[in-house]
Image (tube, rainbow, N blue to C red; front, side, top):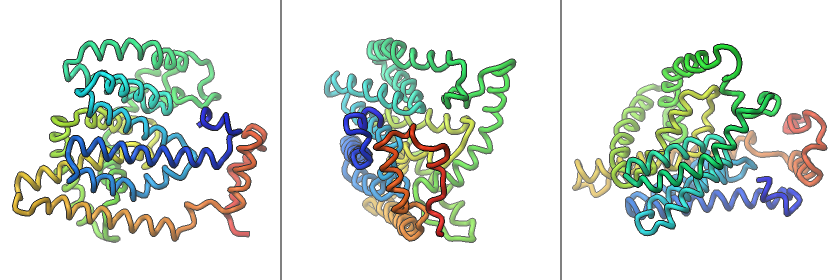
Length: 344
C-alpha cells in the first residue's frame, strides 16, 4: 500500500482503486485456475460465490493488505496449476509467494507450503532453488524481526509469539497446545460456516449440525480430489488453518484470505460426490449447494447494506482523505479512533 500510494501522495481514491483492482484480479485468477483444473462446472459457481461473499466484498472496499495478499496468493496458485506447461510458471509462483509473505506475515506459511509442495512432487531442483532464495530474502527479514530489541513497541508480529524471556519456549508450546481444541471447535461451528455464508435458521441447532456434517463430508472429498489435481490449494490451505488454530489471537476475518480455497474444496467435493454416487442427477448436488450458499451470501449482503455499521459516514471520509494527504503522522493521537459515526 505504501509503495502504491507514494507516487500519488497517498491519495485515498488511488488506494481504494488499487484495492478494488486487486480484488477483481484475484477473482479472475481464481476462476481461471479452477477452470483449468476442475472445469467450468465448478469454476463458475466458485467464482460467483467468491464475488458475492460478504467478507470478500468487505475486503475489496477497505484499505487493508488483505486484497493484495489474496491477489498474490491466487497468482501463485494459478501459476502452480500451469507449472507443467513451462518453468516460467514455477518462477512466477515462487515470486508471488515471496511477495505475499512480504505483504502479510501470515504468508510465511505459504513459503513453507510451496517448498513442501515441490518436494512432494519430486521437483527437488525447484525446491532447492526456492529455499535458497527464501533464506536470502524472507529468512533475512525474519532474522531482523527476531533481532529487534523492542518488538512490542514496534508492534511487530514476533511480539505476539511471546518467545522472549525465561522459559518462553516452554510457555509458547504449552499455550499453543491449549488453544487447539477450543479453537478447532470455534473454527468448525462458527468461522468456517460464516466464511462460506451457509444459510441457517435462528434459534435452532439442527441446521448447524447438518451443515457441519455436510462441510466435513464434502470438504474431505474435496481435499482428496484437489490433492490429486491441484495440490497447491491443499498445500496452502492446511498450513494456514493450522496457523489459525495456534495463533495467539482469533478473529473470523483471518479466514478471509482463504475463502476462495474453502469454496473450491467444498464445491469440488460436491461435484465429485455428485458424479460418483448420483450421476443421474447431473450435478444436482453441486447446483443445490451453490443455490443455498448464494442465498446465504445475499441475505448477509443485504443485511450488511441495511446495517449502517459497515458504512463510513461522510465526515469520517473527509478526515481520512485529509490524513492520507497530509500524512498519518500528523494526526493527533486517537483521532482515528474517535466515534465519528455516533449520532449527535
